Structures are given as C-alpha cells and as structure tokens.
Length: 324
Image (cartoon, rainbow, N blue to C red; front, top):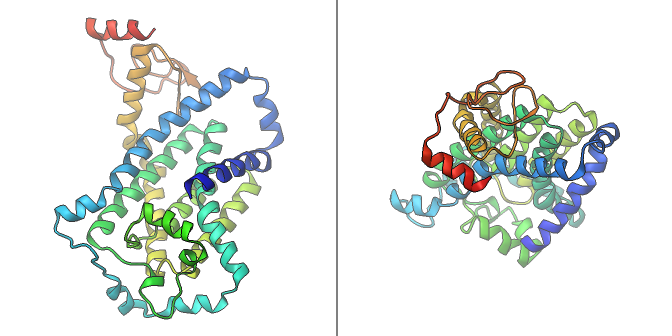
C-alpha cells in the first residue's frame, strides 16, 4: 500500500504547491538561485524531520514496552469506553453509502498525511522557522503523551468490537487492511486518536502561523472531515476523538509558548555541528534568516544565542578539516 500512497501523496504535494502557495511568493523564490534554494530547503527538511522520525520509531516499539511491563497480548480496555458511551458511535454509520465510504477512505488514507506533510513543507518553504519548530515540538509531544496509553491502555477499533459497527475501512480492500496492520498490527492504538490529534494540531498551527485564507479554510474543512471519518469508518470511539482533540490543544499550547526551551538542546546541537563543519548554513528561528555559525554560536543578524561559547580541541579541528 505504501508503494501506492507515496506517489499519490507526492502528486498531491505538487498540486498543493500551486494551489496554496501564493503566486507572488512562488515568483519571488525564482529570483534566488534554484540549486542553492533547493539545497537549503532539503537541508531544512532533514534538520527538522530527524527528531520527529526518531520519536515515531521509538513509539513503534510499543509491543516491546508492553511486554516489558507485563501487558498480555490481546489486552483490550474497550469495555471501559463502552461503559461511557455504549454503542453511540454506531449511529454515524446509519449514513453509510458506498460513495461516502470511498470518500471517507480517501480522506483517512491520503488527505490526513497530506495535511500533515504539506503543512510542514509549507512552513519551511515560507521560511517560517519558528512555526516549523512549534510544529515539530507539538508533533513530538503528541506521540510522547500517546505512547503510554498505547502501551498500558490498549483499546481495539470499534469495527471489531461492536457488533453494530462495520469495519468499513478494512473491508474496502485487503491491501488497505494489510497496510494498516503494518503500522498497528493488533488494531488497538485507539485512545487517544492520533488521526484526531495530529490533524487538529496541524490545523491549529496553520491558524496560528499561516496567513493564506485559502489554506486556513482547507485545513479546517479537512480536519473536520477526518474527525468524521475516524468514527464513520469503524475505527475510533467518540472518547478517542475527544481525547485526541484535547491532546492536540494541550500540546499546541505548550509548543506555542515553550518551543524555544523544549527544542533548545537539539537546536544547539545543530548549531555546533554547523560550526564544526563550517557548513551548512542553518535557519535562525528568531529572524528567519539563514546563518553560518560563529564561535559564539549566535545569529549575526539578531544576536539570538544557540549555545555557549566553545573552544575547539585539536581533535575537533581535525574533524572539521576532514569534512571541509
């Protein structure tokens, strides 16, 4: 399924570039040397993607963590959620039609990753480095807070728990069912809903940082549709949805206020590596300019500090010369 989704997602990102990036912004970028511009863009993607990928990979060690703390395989706490809401989620499937099921599947499988990926790339392309930092911090916090629930409080999907709810997504195609099980083999990562949390997070970041009215409206409509589909397709409980929304609001609040502190160690590490190697230039989150680090690890334009003053040892000096 990944082989089908990645090309489709790439085409959607290209289309999104022409739909959501204002023409004047696209034209202004043409004045910058093309090769240099893309080199900076790809470097920025790498710098900000690494911490998200590390956390994403660690979270997927949940089976090992569950085994370490003695959680038996097949554990399911959905019965407690049933006490709270019963089978009320089944009412949404009364709207079921083949067309609505296919549209919902499209939003769940493609529009959700598009919203996350394109928002991240858009912030970098617009050189909104502080906003990108907030996005990364909120993303990491969501996964870190969700991880203990996935390990200690596994909840199975509604479609395989409630007799009155059909697993519409997994019935669409064996390829889809197999692809989903690669990410979540036991289909028990329900509470809180990451689809709800991450799409809500992306929407809040867009509303907080992106001026494009068109993309703001798109993010709101897409997020609302995703929240509907996770219930309609027989995946999540209403409690999962509410938990995901609350998680996104809390993590975004923390990211908007404290991203500089939470991201500081990683940013300082990148600044040191940039200084040792004398390349590449790195983005400054304070003034949105690209800078080459000096020995005091501060931005020459705005003075923002990225670490303490350092003296290079002979070993570090040889290390730097080797790469320059």
